[in-house]
Image (cartoon, rainbow, N blue to C red; front, side, top):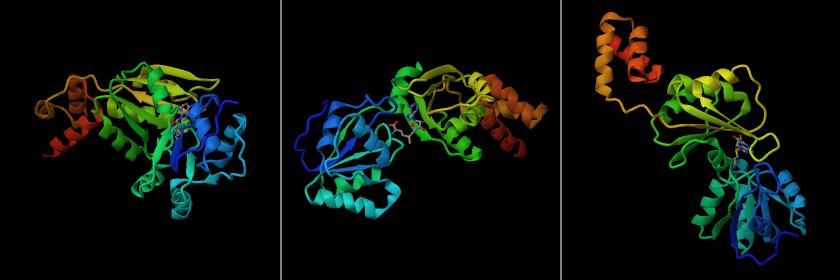
Amino acid sequence: MNFVKTKLNAGLYFVATPIGTARDITLRALDVLASADVVAAEDTRSLRRLMEIHGIPPEGRRIQAYHDHSGAGAREKILDALRDGKSVAYASEAGMPLIADPGYDLGRQASEAGFMVTCAPGPSAALTALTLAGLPTDAFFFAGFLPNATGARKARIEALRDIPGTLVFYESPKRLAACLSDMADVLGGDRQVAICRELTKKFEEVRRGTLAQLASDYESTTVKGEVVLLVDRSHSPSVNESDVDQALKDALESHSVRDAADLVAQMYKLPRRPIYQKALKLGKG
Ligand code: SAM
């Protein structure tokens, strides 16, 4: 038996669960799951299965379903248990709760109401991927899932373009190719990327390359499983906006908007799309 049943203090315990291999759970997480008065989960079936694997008996406790979108009723039930002085364990389907997963509303309301809120931490796909990607980890930005529609996705990528750290995205395998291609358009093809797939599972894989290479490799590849996509920060020297404007104005005197944008984007090693938009504006002026 890997867990110890103890009397827990009243409060909310966020519990991290594995992102693949079932044994990637901490001993403390098992203790909390075994000992909490109330157990709640985003996905009751997967938590029941995990508890079975680790030999934790339900002991009359029915796992309650909770998702931030399940509404105030489900949240009130958990808050009621806290008001009754109970200990409540909450796990999302995989990894750390609240990290692209439910738990935010629950944690905020529980702490605002003055209850103890703590966490039995554990694996998360974002940190596991950062450890394996081979990209700098001194500073990183977790950007979660990008929007599904190309326009909104490109706008979001554009907003993240100059962040001085490694960008970390969660992505569906179905959208990986489209996402890489949008990133290459907006950020330029030279940036280094890592695709971390099926982490901690049998077919774990890390692929590294430039955005241009991987966008082309994945164009006609069917990807399966779960994916984290990491993108290096920009290494182009910061360019003075007014120099770019002047170069565009000069180029527009003898070139079309399209050619002027290509020329200046190449000259300053900048992604073409924002330069093209600038050239369009200047061309109209
Ligand atoms: N809470 C989780 C965490 O802490 O990582 C994330 C949950 S989010 C709903 C699910 C996404 O996380 C997947 O679509 C994928 O992008 C990423 N992910 C989860 N497990 C993964 C794994 N084993 N390998 C690669 N990516 C994973």
